[in-house]
Length: 234
Image (cartoon, rainbow, N blue to C red; front, side, top):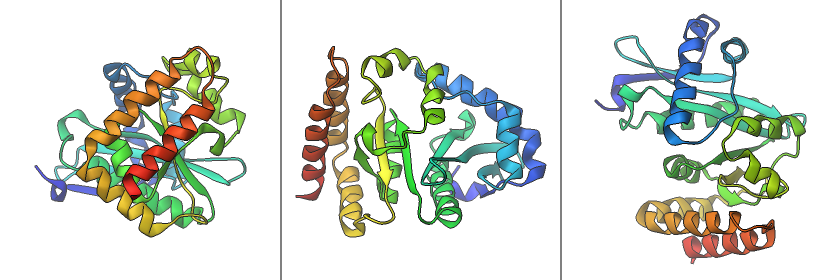
């Protein structure tokens, strides 16, 4: 099985019939990882399809294979590509990468001036984000829209987020800024990430140790991000 076995496209209203299956798989996947996600109803996911703000993937046999949708915050100044999910039987075929690239392209088309950001604990997603030009940032550089942060309440790490005064948590924040994006630096960042994946693992290990300290360590995280960026751009 390879990526040529799939079709990745902007979701259409008629794809609403897959909304319940998608939501169920999102929930099961979060449980398997031991993490939480902002829970969404089938009606919410279906609405994204109707509005043309989602990407869906199908296997060539017609079965549902993957999904991701767009959310906007701070009056369109920030965009998040949320709910990335791939059906278990179609994982390890490069589909998540194809979906992320398609939803990123759609986000840039619909919101060309918006900053695109994400919060994740998954190394695979972090690598894909790096390929697209995202860079690690502190939480203070993300949207401060209260509705976005309410979505974290269903996460198993929500108490940590509250303890850290919403300055840090177990997730890594990554941001694509269309205005300040340094394309050559981002390209090199992604190339080095693939060459030296252990550096990212070390970064995550150190970051999580900082997070688990009793007091918010935003200053410490900034220093860690600077060091991480230096390692990939030296």
